[in-house]
Length: 126
Image 1 (cartoon, helix red, strand yellow):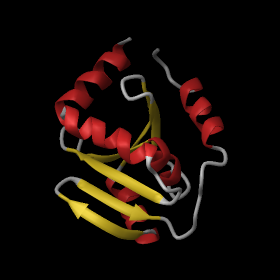
Image 2 (cartoon, rainbow, N blue to C red):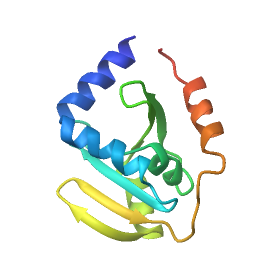
Image 3 (cartoon, rainbow, N blue to C red):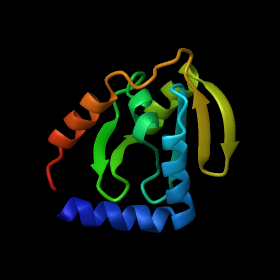
Image 4 (cartoon, rainbow, N blue to C red):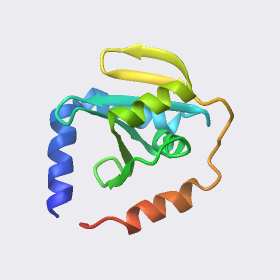
């Protein structure tokens, strides 16, 4: 319960409703090779959600958690992991606190559901 409450506060303070809706839309519309990254000022790291999180794990091994609020996995990228992603992908877009990258190859959703279940299974608090 503690993690759920903390993650909810963190998400609501860091992202307004518009950004939360944009995260969901970006992941629902993900084309199988796009990674959307959002800077979390409070933590000082980038985060990726849903399919973007899954694709990021093909390059780095970030901390993975499951957000009950968003109903999708979240990865937290350290500055060194972010640097590694930047070097291995093509930057498509950049706005204040947001990056969009494209992977070099189409990754699709093969293995996504199994990965989500493994992220959920490794959660300490529910």
